[in-house]
Amino acid sequence: MNIQKCGIIGCGGVGATTAYTLVESGLFNEMVLIDLDHKKAEGEALDIAHGIPFTVPSKIYAGDYDDLKDAYLVIVAAGANQLPGETRLDIAGKNARVFEKIIPQIVKYNQECILLIVTNPVDVLTSLSLKLSGFPASHVIGSGTVLDTARLKYLLGRKFKLDYRNIHAWMIGEHGDSELAAWSSATVAGLPVDEYCRQHGRTRDSLRLDDIYQEVRNSAYEIINRKGSTFYAIAMSVRRIAQALVRDEHSIMTVSSYAEGHYGLHRVCIGLPTVLGVNGVEDVIEIPLNEREMELLQMSARTLMQTVQSIGGL
Image (cartoon, rainbow, N blue to C red; front, side, top):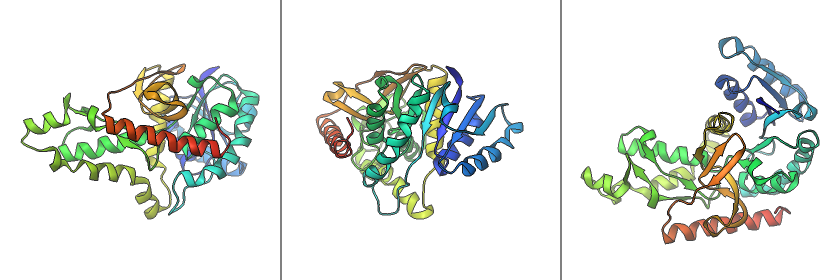
């Protein structure tokens, strides 16, 4: 297995931008792009390759599934895009059919890679990929609520006028309408939100936390309504996940990972604080949640499980 080799399946906006972002990062020295439209994959690979002299030397090319045979990481970004007015769950059936063709082809040539699912609905398709691949749960990861968590930290940073890196707060659950903000465990400069507000003469109500949550949850809809799709920030999220894996960072990120007893959840892939290293998922961290947050997480999981069952998943 070549830890510096990555495959990307799907060369639409998300897949192509992810390829560009990863080449810029220097994490991999070899990358293969696969798409149903092979000429599209060739064009994207050639366009990115011409910029390699400005970054770390590497090789990027259009290929086929047999080129994945020694890839450490395989990123799946293929499928139908979410259209204006659609929820992520609305496109579950369409993209499940796509994955039923893609995942067996990956497994045919590589049974040891780590699968990183990016296509929406990401939690549902991560569950389906786990079933179709037969891989250990530690090797099947979805991008989950990593981007949602970044959006939350970004907005809180603006609200507090602080570097977002000094804010720790999680969006968990479905990457979609049923996700939740774990406010009870959020900290600002190491302090609970209420205590930070008290020390700075502010009240929790003045923060309008529900407005921030709604803005996070609806961000994708707002972007899609304006420009048709989202791809920059999700590509940056994928780069961050890939970095945690390749560099064996043991970083905690809210990827979509398989819950088996965590938070009382069973047999569902869902966005939870997860430790990532070179072998994939190392642990799922159970952060403190209040009673209402636990209820919302359970509801989010049930929503996902119903959709997974409807498409023949776990």
